[in-house]
Length: 424
Image (cartoon, rainbow, N blue to C red; front, side, top):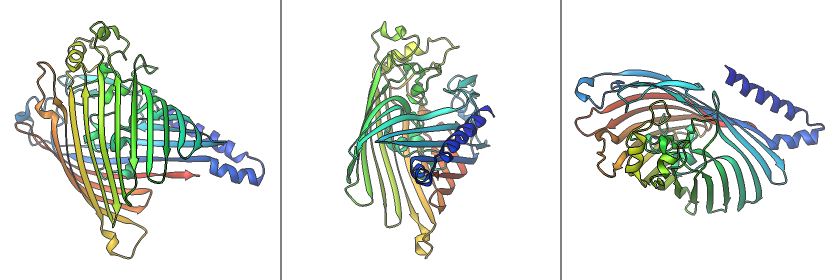
């Protein structure tokens, strides 16, 4: 409840400043300067597989099970203010899974042990917080806590920007998602191009694991973000063909020294260089909406990091598992608006299909053996109904396919989502 009051108080204060702007001309100007918006998801799922922590270790004894879940994956309040003369401030306050500051989880890779997961920022996660100076459409400098736009979902992460009820797991299970770190970016756009380069704090190799690769590396369990080493990223989008957007993005940075006990890595000359390259595309024309993403990642010194991490104290934040040297992820999805056959132009109903694959241990180093369950194929389909552009009702059947002897994992999911600006 405390976090809820913080957000309400913040909005109330901003609204008060907005209302106290003097004459009507100033008041009219303030409407274009202060923006409030956000997005949110409410999800119900029936998962037709066991939730036992040992289901991959003992697949035979965990067949023919099911369980259900209700969740609020992301609820975000967005605020922005244009100070004038090219200066702009923006922030996003995010509640994940109801906004708890700490939660108990059963760790799948630690024999089902209970573990407390701490969210950075306490009860409220600050996903974005930056100040920007605009020189022209082609030149903007942004500094603060910013999005690292690697891949399709990190750049387009609002729930109206993907078909699935939850974010596509081919990306969200191996990368931070949404990936946000403190740093500086330079970006610009022309009618046919958008480009961005970023300088951010490095990832934390102590947080890497076998199921999610570097996903937890951008989340600091401390009151500050360790930045003994740094990372760089870029993204280039092209819009030359009408209805088609294609993009390349990439990341490089050292990760081994970005923990409190950094000497464990540096004493052995371990750098933990993370390299990621991604291609993504969207097509929207002729009542068709299609998306694709391909991603490859490499971690240098993966064997040394695995050996060191597995010896870390159990009381620390490390999952203490092996980590892969390489990961691979790809997916394609396409939907058709069947309401386009009718005269109603105010709503859309996409019927879609999705196919993808990802392996969090695609290649391993040294004598580390890949986990058979790390290679997953995702086949899904469903509907997205948009009564308005900002609101969607989703229903989806997902089939997560494994190689033998592991059990396949079907699921049925329903969600309601919104994304838009409330005051602008």
